[in-house]
Amino acid sequence: METALYYAKKSCDTMMRKFAAPDLPPVGKFHYHQGVFLSGMQKVYHVCKEEKYYDYIKSWVDSIIYEDGSINSFDKGMLDDIQPGILLFDLYKRTGDKRYKIALDTLMPILKDWKRNEVGGFWHKEWHPNQMWLDGLYMAGPLEAEYSATFGEDCYIETAIEQIILMRDHIQDPKTKLLYHAWDPTKEIDWADPETGLSEEFWGRALGWYVVAILDILEFVPENHPKRQTIIDIELELLDALSKYQDKETGMWYQVVDKGDAPGNWVESSCTSLFSYAMAKAVRMGIADKKYVDMAIRGFEGVINTSVEFDGDDLLIGGVCIGTGVCNYEGYIARPTSVNDLHGAGAFLLMCAEIAKHQ
Image (cartoon, helix red, strand yellow):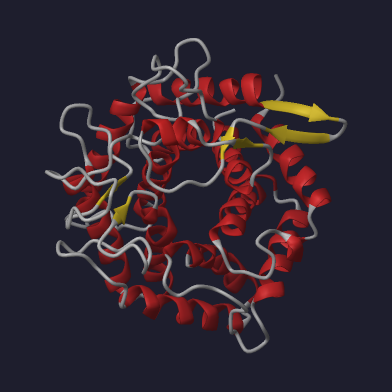
């Protein structure tokens, strides 16, 4: 088997041949589909330093952020359209171009005023009132943390830390220590349990975004922060819980994480990539036992063996759940899969860039 960096570069090159940077879908929109994929490419660039990857990222950003720093098109009512802001820090630090800072300063006040439910949790979207979705932490938390570290406004990183803890407190299952996909404290939405307000299942990719986001936030939390150890403990508890559900045969994780033996369930490549990234990164950061590197490498090998194939020079990543709302079991397992979906490619690149640091 080739190195993780080999597969990462093949994936980047494939996607660059398929899409000119401004044509990444949804075209013309500042959205997490592009943001997730390009975040993965940015991690790969940090490992290999090949300028074509930096140039591609910059080309997309420059196609959507105008000369005055305004952003072409994004929805101020959904966290998904805030996430690509994470790409702007590298560009600003390298070029000093003020429009990247202007764009960040457009996004951050939106987060400061974000609607919250009764416990202080961010609404996932304006049209999903009161609902906390686990994947929402990835869309805003790392951006808030890096903004605070870069520009010195501590309120943002404090909010990111708060959201980590609120999700653990209100969405975690006390038995498995896994976290459900979502929670509605009003219990009004149809998927909410009438007693708890929780959704029914542990969806893999939502858990993946949460476990990844915690570490990406933690990178910017000062060593002496009073809640730093709390965040570490939340991460380690979840990594331990996830370790119990890694499929022994494939090394992967399932679409519905705790029901590997249930009819219709299937191993899913994007959540496996995200869990592998988190396990490898937690070890590299010095907060987790080295056994997690072995689990991460097994996950990486599982994705390569079960979900990756080549079509000529093109690397194709399959087994990726398309985007989904909150479902019951039947809804999650019925979701179609896609090949080289930007969610899946981005998660794959994150994993490969991190695994490469252990090879």
